[in-house]
Each structure stands twice: as C-alpha cells, then as structure tokens.
Amino acid sequence: MQPEPTLTSSQLTAGQDWPADRYAAHARFVADLASPVVDLLAPRPGERILDLGCGDGVLTAKLTALGCSMVGVDGAPDMVRSAVARGVDARVMDGHALGFGAEFDAVFSNAALHWMKADPDAGIAGVARALRPGGRFVGEMGGHGNVAAITVALVAALNRRGIDGAALIPWYFPTPGGYRSRLERQGFVVQQIELLPRPTALASGMAAWLHTFAGPFLHNLPAAEREGVEREVVELLRASLCDPEGHWTADYVRLRFAAILQP
Image (cartoon, rainbow, N blue to C red; front, side, top):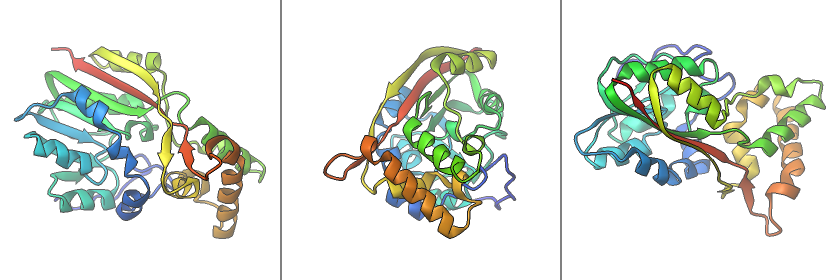
C-alpha cells in the first residue's frame, strides 16, 4: 500500500468523514443491495477491473473471489485501510483525478459517483483514460430525487437557524438524460441507463443515517447545536419515512448505467 497523500477539498467532501467501523455498522446495506449492478457488470474471470469508490472493499473482495484482478480506489484513508486488511489492492486516490492509463477491461462503481460533485466530467474522463478501448463503465449512484425528503428536512432545519442549507448539499444526483450526455461527451456509448426508486430500510434508524452521511450539512455547527438539528430533522421526517412500528426507510432513488468506451 502506498503512503497516504494529503487530501484536498476536491478529494473528500468537506465535513464528510468515513470511519470504516461506523460505515460497516450503519451502511452495510450499500454493499448488500449491489447485486443488480454487479450482475450488470457481468464480470468474467481474468478481467482487470477498477472499483471506483471501493469503500471498505467488501464488493471488491467479492469480485476478486469471482476470479477478477481487482484494484480499488477511494478518497477515504480509513476505508482504504479496511479494504487492504481484506486483502484488496486498494489505494487512496481522488476520484476526480484517476491516475491510470488504458489498463482496465472495466470500471465499476457503486454508491460513490454522486459524492464526486466538484467535477463529474473530470471523473468520467478519468474513467475513459483508465479503460482499454471497448472497455465497460458500469455503475450505480444516487439519481434525481434521491433522499429528497431527507435533503429538504436538513435544508429547512438549517435555514431556520440562518444557515443557507441548500449551499451545503454535497451530492450530485443526475437525471438519466443528463448523465447520458456526460458519458457521451467522453466517448462512451450508453447501453443502458435508468432511474430506479428504491426505498431502503434503515436498520439503525434515521439518526444513525444522518450521523453517517450528513456531515457536510452539520460539521461547522457546535456539537450541541448539531445534535439539535439532527433531532429536528428526525422529527420532520417521522411522518413520511417512519412506519407505526418505528421502522425507518430512506427515500433512495438510484441511477444505474452501463456504457462502452468507443475504440
């Protein structure tokens, strides 16, 4: 494993830390629900595949077990350490500036591309550089309307405190048409792209989801005020995302796609 570089604001979204143990405890559903996009990838033994935004390497290791030669990259050093501990060839790397040249048969990404908001086109261009001609780019990310209710509640709670909550939204959730255009501009032929509503059960509850994923909204607040915002958001969402038995659901909408790099 290479030494960890100093991360810039373009490499990790401001205020969003990624402790691997917290992610495993509260967000394991991200990997558990990835079977459809893995099926779309259709990995073949012997293929060299880049996992873009590999996180703690759970999916990367599964693809390795299928006989693929895997490399994982992620901007979060603690996640990369966890992936390396699983035996994954994982490296700390900015998804906006991939450092590979025509060496992969496929690039795979699950639940990571929507965090690369600073310059989505740069990320796609890096994927194109990393692929051999005719290589595949297959991924799933948050799509238009993803966590809309949660976002509105966070923005409203912050606005009520005199903070421009909309300016802190850290995610890029594109429409199929918008992302298709970005892919085509970088030389991809889009084979499939669709928006899929996928309400997702939160076994740990909404407060844990906020603690895991909403750092960019809350990191500049004093601890006591941050806790107050989280409580307010939970109550704002209770009527729409919590059932009478107390089970929480996140209003996920996913964008799933497969594209081929033109020779």
